[in-house]
Image (tube, rainbow, N blue to C red):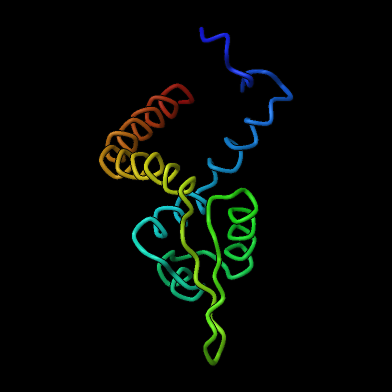
Length: 127
């Protein structure tokens, strides 16, 4: 084990645990994946991520900006438009998030099969 590490996520009060809490959120992963493709404004992000409410999108964008993963830039247009893009830190996270997305899309059928198999065994045990 590398003794030079300052943080250990297995310790209860490690601040790096907060990263896992935030990044494990489905909306966060989706926002990061969409922004990895291109700069987006609020309504385009909302349109790209079906099912996310404006309130949740706004909350997640503020959180990601605060954590240094995204930056916002106000465009001097009429009406005013705010564009969101990934920071270099956000781009690093996006690489990992894309791998999770790709894995999920490639393996979801196996997961569904395992769930169905488990459920059928559970039903048989109940009978």
